[in-house]
Length: 424
Image 1 (cartoon, rainbow, N blue to C red):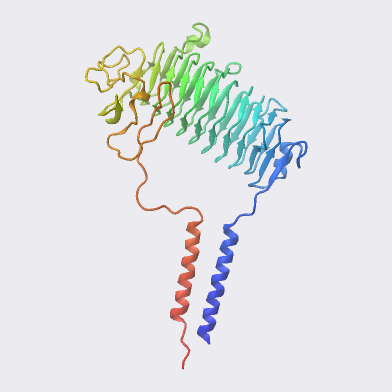
Image 2: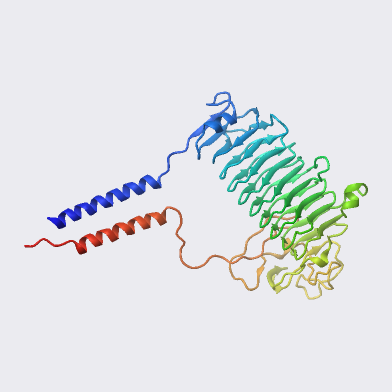
């Protein structure tokens, strides 16, 4: 009898454990809160205040005059056609995100100190927005691990302004025609004391000063961008901007703006101004620059390892530098690498734009390479990166499920092994 009772108790334990896990593993359904003339709320701020973490605020087409503060994890998105959120108080941000895990998607945002400010927050996503006529389209303030992607950030003071913000991703945006504000210069992207950010696949052009500028910012990765027609400089690595990486970018027609005035006297016209040290600048395409690189002696212009690439249909292995449209050397052996060195000190200058060298990867790496984005000439492709190898990685709910099931099995074994048998 005692063994039978213990078995019964074990089965009850199994059932209770499974019920408990199901309760913990299945979150409550998030609500969809509507804003608009026929919605649950007339303003976005009312909907935000009424929402609970994880809810979605769907904004109907129309124009809303607001300054919205978001202090909980929410998604704020267009219900259908793109709504416009105009600033109510132009001295403040249109959207101020002070909570982690906020998503802003599909809105037009205009007229604020910032279109969207992410303040002391992480894991936020700003995507598919149009931001115009703001001092800063998107302002990253002391924030990490956020994403700004697929946005039109044209015609503000700055496109993306990062202040003491690191490990963010800025990808596939347009930041053009940034005008500055007062004494501010106007950059497509600006990092001030920001480390480890990734900037990839953006169009940064026709800005009042720089396409992208880094000040006291290190270990940022800038790749596969089109940086064109900026008034003074395509990329500025200012004081303290050290150990950044600049690969697979097309940098063209920068520095052809005003030739007089304070802006011209302070910043020489060039593709890249390298004041910081040990910045890696290779496998880029420079077209029609008055100076491709000023301060080249402070930078690393050659790949540190041999690369595998394809040139004229033939696989080659060798070191690679940059392509310059005004390079006068020749390619005597048909490898796509010219001689002599470029005027900037590149030992292995390319004789064609980087997009014409096929898939490029480290000679020492056999994993599949990362494919880059389209440049002016062809599809620019990225340097190979090691792939993940080895056993499967368990993630998400599989791990707690295994823990619970393991506990159940152990409990059952204990019950059946150690329970005293009924005497006969």
